[in-house]
Length: 238
Image 1 (cartoon, one colour):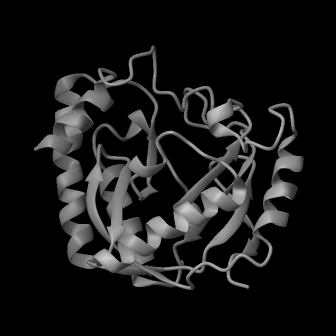
Image 2 (cartoon, rainbow, N blue to C red; image 1 turned 180 degrees about the vertical axis):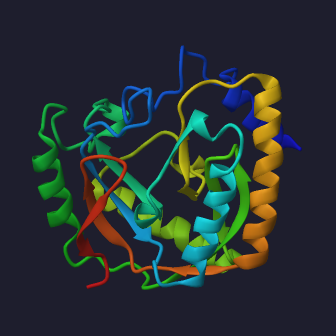
């Protein structure tokens, strides 16, 4: 499968290169502890009281039980979410990752205040119906709109947030919606990567059986200090 090959290339480092995965040093220590990387983002949390939440946690537990679990750092269950549009993060201060009207030296607090002002009164669709399509590389659940209409609404929401925040990324249209379950801490051998692919298929099969579709929303503007907690500033529904 094409996605399996892409996952193997990523897991082994063949896709991106470098001594280690990009998140190590920027978001996590080599041991998987979160490091400070403040920013803001727009997301939909997964309701902890929902069947979908339990299904995602069960899929994550399958991955945690694998023999290579120590190669990953797993996200706390209460942080599980799907990003609608990426905001800013302190370590990525480049023209194509920063609001065009703000200086690159603006503080995260200033950027966040600007985002809150721009999004005040911005009304997103209340709910989004989505479906899982795969577990990629043992660390992320790929998501898509449950129908073409729902996918279109997700994309239109991304476009509206891009325009409101004046944050134009070159890879905007290629973005794959997802729920992150874990981050990779070290490159794997090809045999190890293949083992993760097989475990991902097992987790995906269970997830698709338990959660063929889920409802997310409303959208939230959130701030974060680390990848372990996303604090809501406001809902984007008024």
